[in-house]
Length: 222
Image (cartoon, rainbow, N blue to C red; front, side):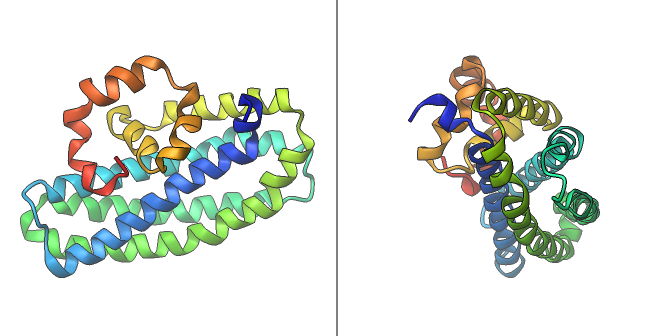
């Protein structure tokens, strides 16, 4: 498949939605399981905390990229799309995401871990429930239609612009970049990472940042 076909709007949005969907599902299921069984290793709480922090940063960055760049562009060609409703849902999910982060922080407090896990599972469950119909609405009302209307060259420019904006907002990169890469199956990873600097893929992620993101490994597709 040629690069323009791989980097079109629909493929790009589908990839980031797939990453976040898996991140939400794994976080929620892990919080539920750990609330019942406890952490199985000494680094378990650190790994789940970092995974949830990376998820939260990537999700916020994705929604801000849509609000600040994607939706303003698409409004001019998709005048009937429900942009205002989509943005309200972003605001609602941002509030739930605040709850997720507060609960996740409790994992660092041994005396509050059990309550924190319960609160984390509850907030992640609600976020997961809101997320799925939201991305389905985007797919049906926005992404596929825009993909059909925007020329390939413009799609390449936009996908690069959206990706760069989202990556700038996704911090810290030593957690969020591995999160982005390793919540995708290997067959999707190469196309998604094509625009990333070679140094990030060959040196920063596997060497320089490895120790910092390694606790997340049980939750990733490495």
